Length: 446
Image (tube, rainbow, N blue to C red; front, side, top):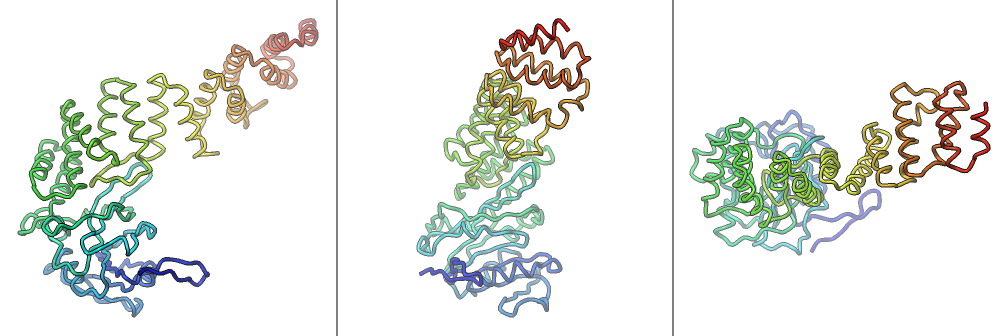
């Protein structure tokens, strides 16, 4: 049974005495010993697999396995270290991956026939790519990993009736974890990993060789043994190829089938969005993007999935909500962007919020965003362009019947620039609309 214990700060954390960890290190010279120390404390045992001799600054409690990459690929190393495990379960990590510990399952949730996949997220400021691999396996399995440097358990899982745990662990990384894969070497062995077709398809897509990429995805989809996240990756890859080849009905059909099979993913929604956008079907494009946005907080269930960043998504949602005539919803997305960025929000977002709040007759919001837009320039530091913009906004305020605020603005401007006839004229109009007739007459008389 799993227990908890207090760390040096008195905080309680989970104890993974039933789980050991194997970490594959490709570049021994860039080992982060602090991170390895954390792993060694958290798990019952930590073994590092590297191609060089053991570093002298490594904690003695950490085991080291040196191998020759010409003789043993990743899959062979993982199989060897799995057979040497002393705990019931083994978690496999690679250098550069950050484990979200809170996503690890409870020991009681697992049995020898329930293994745990990992969603490996490569994320930058603009996008996110996901790859799935089964990374937590039972130590009683005999040589479950096929492939060479692309370890894969598909055949073993299918042959032995293994189930996949329904809540994948999540590993974060900032670099491409599959750039090292030599597709020719992977294809040359007897137990080919199905994922090599996805890797090839992705590389051919990057090279804009859509016909060749589609062939790889079709080849994979013909396989009888295929894990669900890899099947989705192949279906989505083929749909992307059809999209780039302008075979839009086929792409739409595959995207809809993919969503029907598994809503928790990204690419199919983006395919539908892009096709509707290119066809200038604004309402349909907005609906697809909105459906996509609902899935953003959920871990994707598709391998080789691709996601847009949150900021870009909100930008496009607000843009296409406007094009689809959904101004109220567009206003909500602009407000979300403004809340996220705070002081860093640009003038364009503030102008959009101000215009929409006026159009939607949201008086308090309109006043707030007006003040935010002009706070650094009003009243005496405005450029000619800003003055023209201010006058346009105040005209719209008065068209909505918001004369009191307009009068306050022009009264302050007239006090500062009493020789400006335009400010004087506009102040007279605003005063007359607020029943301050006597003051308006005095201004006229003056």
